[in-house]
Amino acid sequence: MKAFIVLALCCSFFSSRGTPLAFEFSDCDDPDVFKAVDAALKKYNEDGATGTQFALYVVMEAKRTAGPDPQLYVKYRILESTCAPEENKHWQQCHYKVSAEAKTGECTARVHMNDADKTTNVSQECKIFSDVSKIRLTEAPCLGCFHHISSDGSEVSEIMKKAVQSFNKHSDESALFKL
Image 1 (cartoon, helix red, strand yellow):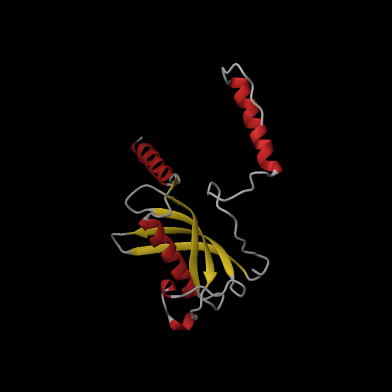
Image 2 (cartoon, rainbow, N blue to C red):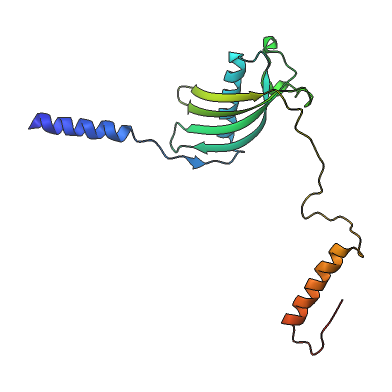
């Protein structure tokens, strides 16, 4: 009987330890997110699989587990830098290559940080894209920003007609208005 109780307690202990922790979204400005991406990018550059050094371009997504030793899941984009791997420079000291000739990549990493032991465990996958010539930079006016438009254009008159119709429909005025 005692053996059965011990066996049941051990089984419940091990099954509860195997339950994955829930992730919650983190702000990309969180210092832990930056430390996780920094560790992942350092590891990627140290592995030197591509023969070039990459720098962080943007953090796209970050999730973390609760607890004293956070496990972070980060998705980030990297851009080829001007630093050679043999220079042993930190990626923050490097400049981006000119976009027409730079490789770019997207990485997903799972980073476990243990502050007490000052250790970090990184597992990640990066996909590098070498043909960035198809990406075109364009300048567009910002949404909601002031910019001049012609007051006698057909686009403006259509909007004004709809506005006047709406005003006539919902107002208590005795007269109707037109454009």
